[in-house]
Structure formats: structure tokens, C-alpha cells
Length: 310
Image (cartoon, rainbow, N blue to C red; front, side, top):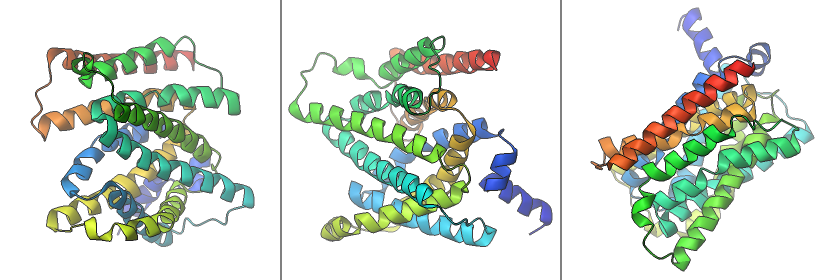
């Protein structure tokens, strides 16, 4: 490997010194991470495995991949007790977030769970204002609201409006709200670890998740049927959508304010709808195309107004 390509890999992983020296680069990393997030559902469905097994394998494979990268690139740093506390808090919030969201999909359906889950940008802004004294972007909140309305339209939720809400759907809505809150909490916890390389943060969180979920996974060992498709799906999910994606995302968390993270989070539902369209052969209604256009327009307006205030 040449010196130039090695330097490029080091920059992509964003070690502590690089992150401290250059606050730029957070936007494109967040965009790419959210685009990858929108394809996670595809891999979960294609794996054919129970949700708990998918989460566990994601943690295990992602953690091992990140451990290999951290060891090779020499990014390990010794954590203080305070940093250990923030890291464990973020790990717990992240893993329980995944479990709650996957269960919400089963209870209330992907459409409803997706809309409810995407209140998380607002929860993130609120928590950042309360815990980190970041000012609420009141002049840009209408764009976030417009994006949330776009999520509702693009998800096909209007087609479900005339149906009654069952107890299972209510439980799914509650789980999606809990997942959104936990995502916001994990984001803020990660922002407290600016001295630690993002790859190391993600590695320790993934390995902690794999260890903590092992007893429950073992109980469901008879329900997991592995074949070439399942292995392919979980390997991509673990190495690309966890090891690489969380390195990108955590680097973005360290470099961007909560306001920017909240706005860019709406890229995820747009990508998820495109996956439904291109892979599963979904036929969006005109109102769904309108919703997707609203998300992209609101995101562009949000970013433009953000740049004007800088």
C-alpha cells in the first residue's frame, strides 16, 4: 500500500488528532452514513433471520471488523472513567434502540414505525438544548416539520388513516418513540467522546452489545437458519453497515452540531423508499413521490439557512 493511500484511509477513519485539527468533513460523512442506513432494512429482510440474531451478528461482525481496523491503524486510546461511562451509555442506548425499532416494525408496520421514529431529530434538538445548552434553531424548525410531513406522505401512512389502531400498533408506536429517544441519547453520548477515535468508540459499543445479547441469542439458536443468502446479508450488514457506517457516522457526530445532524437524518427515509422502489418493486403513489420531494426540498432549505447563519 502506498503512503498516499494509507493516508487516505487514516483520514477516512478520522483518528482523534485528525478530528481535533479539522472540524470539516462531517457533512459528507453524515450523508453517506444516512444513505447506507436506508438500505439496512433490505439486508434484514434478505437475511431471513430473527431480529435478535440480526442485531447480535451485526454487533459481533461489526465489532470484530472494527477491532481489526483499530489494531492495524494504531488508533487505540486509553479511556478515562468518565469516557467509559459515556461509551457504555451510548452502547446501551444504541443496542436497545435497534431492538425497539425492529420490534416496532413487527407490531405497527414499517410505515407507521418509520414516521414515529423520525421524531428523533426533534428529540435530539431538545436534548441538546437541555443538556448541552445548544440554541434551538427556531427559524429552521419549519423545515424539519416539513421534512417530517414528507416522511409521513412518502411512507404511505395516508392509506392506513381509515383503519382502526390496534393494541399491537399502539405498542409499536411506543417502541418507535422509545427507539427515537435512545438514538438521540446515543448521539449526544458520542459527542462527549471527541478525544477518542470514532472507530474505537463503535468497536467497543459493538463488542459490548454482542456480549450482552449472547444469552438471549443462545435461547433462539434453533430459529436461525443460515444459508448463502443469510451469510451474505449479515456479512455486508456487519462490515459495511456497521463497521464502516458507524465510523463515518460517529466522525460526523463529533464534527457537527446537533442541528446539522437532525437535518441530515432525513436522508434515511428517502433512501429507504428508493430501496422499496428499486429492489422490492414497490409502486409509489403520486402523494408518496410528493412526500419524497418535500423531504429533499426541506433538507436543502434547512442546509441553506444553516449556512447563512454561519
